[in-house]
Amino acid sequence: MEKENKIEFLLAIIAVILIGFTLRQAQDVIIIVLLSFLLAYIMDPIVTFLKRIGVPLLLAVTIAALLFLGIFVALGSVLYNNILEFAASFPRYQKKLIDLFLDITQRLNTYSNGRLKFNILEDFKALPVASFAFTLARSIVNYVVQFGVIFLFSVLFVYGKHNFQRKLMKIFSTKRERRIPVVFGKIDREVRKYIALKTAISLGTGVLAGIILYAFSIQYALVLGFVTFILNYIPSIGSVIATLIPFFIGLAQYGITPKPFWMLFALWIMQTIIGNIIDPKLMGNTMNLSLFVIFLSLLFWGWLWGPAGVLLAVPMTTSVKIVLENIPSTSKLAKLLEHSK
Image 1 (cartoon, rainbow, N blue to C red):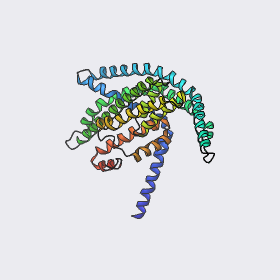
Image 2: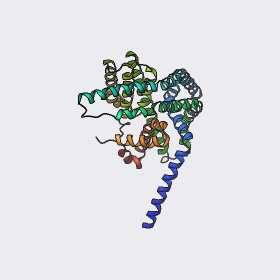
Image 3: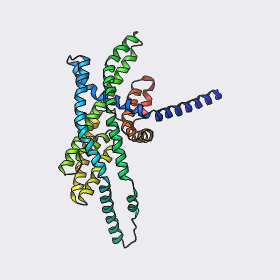
Image 4: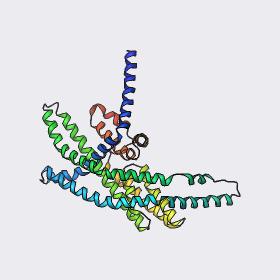
């Protein structure tokens, strides 16, 4: 028995290594598929609504596809130029921020009569911030170029998933077997609800952030609003980063004046209301993930797939939690992903 247990343990380790190797090597294909699934679930509520009012499935998918394509082309063309311009301006912002903080540290050294030394910011001059910004911009541009493939796959997924339930009902015909398509249907509805609500909340947060930044005359308000929209998919951590980035841009733009701090306060109030009142009320128990699980998923998927992994980490983890909750034999495992109340 002990020998069998050792063999099973070794086989499990080998399986994990092979899965990890496959995920790493096939990341380009897997990321495109996952992004296609994400986009498909974002489009799905419109298709479902059109079907409910009597529009044929093929026409409903076509209308939703054309609507989203128009939005993406219009918004993407504006964001494309703004993101590249924003990346090109990063060295200027970096220099202004370093000069600002060095001035503060020099004053602190003077006021303390040299007893306190603050030299760490000197090292920031060597940080490749501009290189990182261009790398990030290139990554976004690459996904824009791949958007045609992602969009085509997402349309096929939306069309196929509406026939999938009916096919399952035909395959599993007995009363006992029909529990399988019922469970699949419930998982599909909950994942669709989660992604649709999270996207709507993230979009609203990004729009409000963009309006606040525009009101305070912060440069690249559109890009920063888009960054807020993306980061809002990451609970807690994302909202903090999405608040601090515009604040530092504001400091670089206006220096230590009241304006950046009032802007920071306005963004913090907005994020607090959405994160602590609106988000929990709409999302319910779906997003009840522990901070440790969120951090671990961001760390793992970010290491495995880079920026795309960070974006997809929490939606994937939440989807796994929904799947585990709806399968009786694994429902207890879902509790391990939740934070304690």
